Image 1 (cartoon, one colour):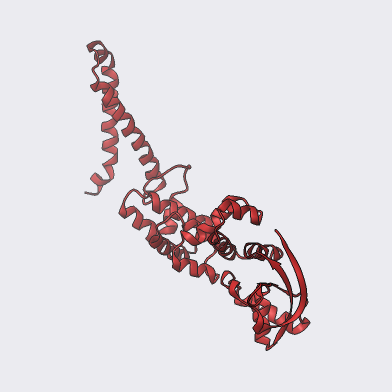
Image 2: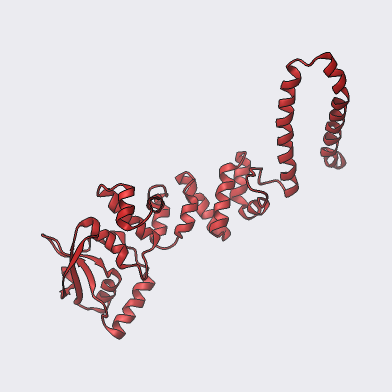
Length: 296
């Protein structure tokens, strides 16, 4: 990452360029805290700006301090100016904020700016010292997330972790399930489970149950991994459904084998097994209908 400082100087706030403010979304509470710090202690560290052959120096670090200084009515601040390429300048924004860190949405905005400059995901990762999967996750927050949720995330109303759990959904359904999760008070992992249940629901009715009764659906889904049962069923009902499906699959294979041409000798030898199977099927059918019969 090649750059060099030119000098630190007192600079008028109006002379600073704010093109890169588009990748920053500082929480108002943090700006207010910095305003109190400035009022009490004054400016302790300089802002950082990138000088250009033409045009105003572009601010890289110190957007919250700049806003706070404006609120205090200050006209100037100490600024460290440096020379750097546009791509290096964006990378420096991340580096200069390692102590307090940018939010994930701000990191995503920086990554998007770098990809728009023509860099590949791998090149962006190399420049930032990150794995390409990190770059991909940050881009996904912006490219696959519904615009309404992007704005909520930018304003700090939606956690990035929550937003990532909504990405597998179509954009319209992201907004719907985000509202469901918020109303039900779901956490990140619960929201992830909610999304899984919605995506794998076997019918529109089951999907509607997930949306209208999210906590019940999630509770009912606490069973071994890999299940995709109807979330409306009780735990016992889901256990039965799994075994019914296994039995249906086995019966389908059995039907093919029997229809494939058993010898007469085989049929005679298997007659008792067929009788036992028929007996069990009758008993299961009888027990399954017992409650209905009792209530009629």
